[in-house]
Image 1 (tube, chains in turn red, green):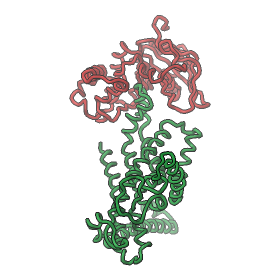
Image 2: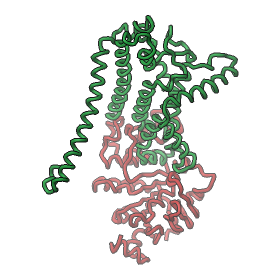
Image 3: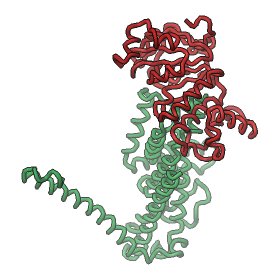
Length: 255
Length: 302
């Protein structure tokens, strides 16, 4: 299927547990580099859990456990010598709710950059501008960079969060239902952005919206009850799914 | 009550009516008690609170003069208590909310200790102060340093005792403030490659600073009015000077009031001073609470 493409993220029999409850069952998948991969499935199917396992955000929850292998760039993410902070700097994340820090627009972008190193003002200025341009937000905010980010509209806030994630220059962008709280126009802008960003980043997108997966992604995986039922090129998966469950779901027979 | 009462049988309506009346009476009574109390102190003591009253030493066996050493002593005590207690309480709260596994044996023990501490009578803290701070730490310091200044009641040990007493207030208030910071904000910070500690200092604490400040000020208010806890650990009923070192003894408004009203050869003679002193003590507490409210509303606006 994707054998001709270099893989960025690979898992082998990856399982995930919240305490005694198993949320992911032996997921084996290869996510190609610089493509958009979408995960669809009904609520609670494990797609977000899987996404959050890639940059180990689930570590923050007490009593979780993983099994199997999660490999990013050839290295196991869960091996003992992995520094989680370094890992997360290579994997940007955009959340369902747009959550700018209650700081200025400028400070939101520079937050990740100034954590570990000092940078000159001119350096920061140019990064802020380029990131905001990448997020198609520059023209709307260039005159109020030092105003609070909380004054932006929901759609602008979400694009700011994308700009903020892009600023630390990751290879991978994880997006957890980035449009679920946005109106159609803002959604359109974010989707356009995703298409542009895939030249540079490997994008993994979790979405409730099948049309969105069909519009923006190159590959789609269908999750059901903690298992990856099917993973294929988006067109193939939506037009001729090989599994009955997938067909039932995309034709709206359940879920 | 009015909307549905018409369809209800009479006894039920009567019960409802009396319940409301009792609740209302209780509320009015509380308001009355507070207004009466403050009113009586203002009308009886208001004339006594003059500039000289605030800035003079007591004279003639506490029957004349002012309360300056008690006012200064209380202020110094509260300042020192804050410096000692608030950082420890804040650090504990940060540990409990940000680092401890919520159901771990250690976190649960700390929580249990904090809750227990909150219910201990303040006189017990005073005795603890004598045993732990003066005898154990003070004497220990003295024999280690070769001095003789720590093994007795002092401003330092009183402040330390009060710091322990107010610790639960600080911890609970700061914990609440930290918990109110949305989990999403922490995750956003961590996802950008921030360490836990960076997330705490750059995102969590700035967002909780209102709660931390108001909690601290409420704790300070609690400590400022406390007398029983400092009875044995450094307060004195009469002093010729303002303390210049933390190892000196000090006068205190609350204790001074106790002295005026019970330890004077002629209690009636000190009555105007008692009223005025009470008013100052009330004013001080009110000022602290007002500061807390102002800080809260100002930071909320931002």
